[in-house]
Length: 148
Image 1 (cartoon, rainbow, N blue to C red):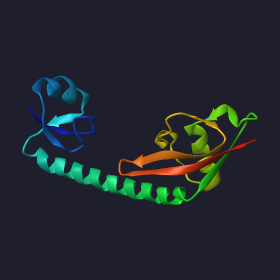
Image 2: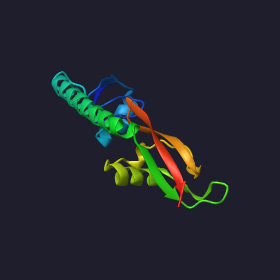
Image 3: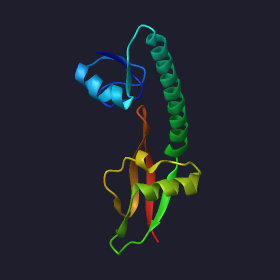
Image 4: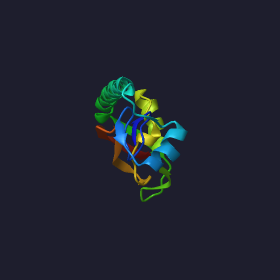
């Protein structure tokens, strides 16, 4: 069955793609949920428009992500936290705390889900934190955790 995707579907394709899929998957899942429409000869122009729109939006998002990356890479964010004598924190510094520090210190609003920190920071010092704003734009910001 040939269909045109109406939205991005992980592992299947992106909006505007024309795909050959299993009949059951199309009939029982994609079409009823409105995620795809049957590919007819007249739908080709609509699919091309969807792809152009997707590419334009992707380019705009990538440029915005690159601008944010340029602004944040050179900065060192300072976060104050309660710590013991050995430099261990009583709590931890999470992606939420880092996102708040970015807003306070730079004025740039950063979604906490874009901060790709594996484990919360639990010690004083300078830490590099990975940030992924776009599938093509990944960078690291420096976070300095100091005792309060």
